[in-house]
Amino acid sequence: MNSTIAQEKRRSCLGKVYLVGAGPGDPGLMTLKGKGLLQCADVVIYDALVSPPILEMINPYAEKIDAGKRMGRHSLLQEETTQLIIEKAQTEAIVVRLKGGDPFIFGRGGEEMEDLVNAGVPVEVVPGITSGIAAPAYAGIPLTHRNYSSSVTFVTGHESAGKYRPAINWQAIAHGSETIVIYMGVHNLPYIIEQLQLAGKSLETPIALVRWGTRPEQEELIGTLETIVEQVEQTGFSAPAIAVIGAVVNMHSILSYCRPS
Image (cartoon, rainbow, N blue to C red; front, side, top):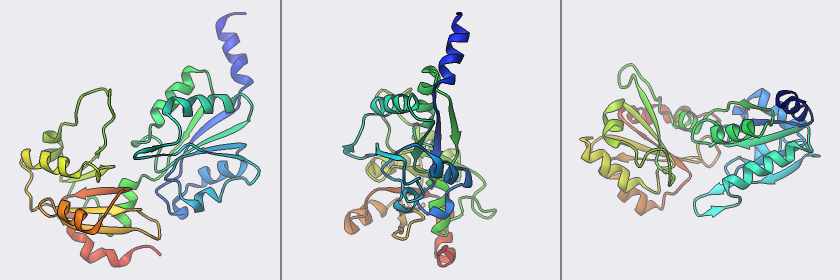
């Protein structure tokens, strides 16, 4: 039997893995396709930031496994999570890897999907709404606006060790677009602001921090690059939160009253 036939035979004996984006938290933002998969899944391996109402959509007979990661609290290593997914695909028909936001936006979905493909496991991605779009929207901050911004940059504020390049080019980020959205940046906020300042970004530039975006407990902290670090220290504002930098933040005072219920 040649290797191609053997590989196809092996794949036919495996279940299928779905990398499903759970969205930012509001269950109303879960896609219909994602919800349908949760309702018929045999096993669901989910992340820490998946909201309880989303978890309630899971088939009550499915096996539920918490593989969540948070700053300083790692449930499973990334390699262990991937191996667990592969093992479950060998015994279960529908395996859902449930990830907060969108799997391919700072969610390691690309890494997991690549490993599954290399292992010969059938896999499909189901996109979700990312917090970098949804959280500002719920805070009344449009990322683009004809009077303020025609470009957006999404960037991680929490770089991993051993990545493909040593550091984010904050010089390029500072001048690359009119709106900057930073994921996982609260912990490194003083450093990020320092780098943006060194790159020539005005300290008067508005910034918004949005915590627990789209959930009932969502809260915002509005300031400037000059004031925000002190505001964070004074209020105890903490992760999980995204940061929005740019003139569009000024729309918060006008549009925040229209927050979805």
